Image (cartoon, rainbow, N blue to C red; front, side, top):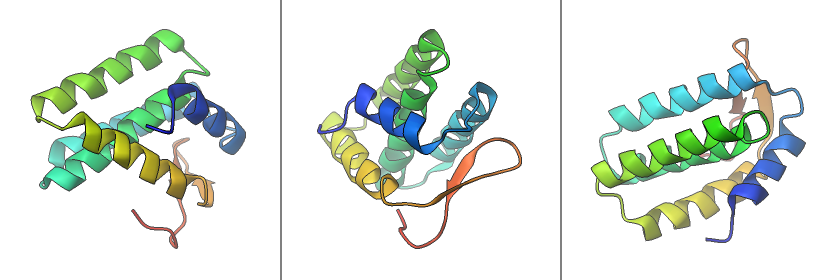
Length: 119
């Protein structure tokens, strides 16, 4: 995996300068719900990667919470029998896209990307 927890955390801090702890926790739970309702294996891996990326960003606010969320990612991935090689590949692919996207803050403090570079 090219990306690391620290490389993602650094990107998060540089990209989401106005992010808050509460907003990022809300985003994590949003991604968790998308993972829980994903129908295909590919969608599950992508949503799991999203959960991991958000958890890495939370490190700047609360390291213990972030590690708990990363543990949640691992637990859910294991429960759905996600291959970790697939997960690592998707994290790298998603971060490559995320680094090119334009992000907008929403009313609840989460961020969503503009259309143009899709998943």
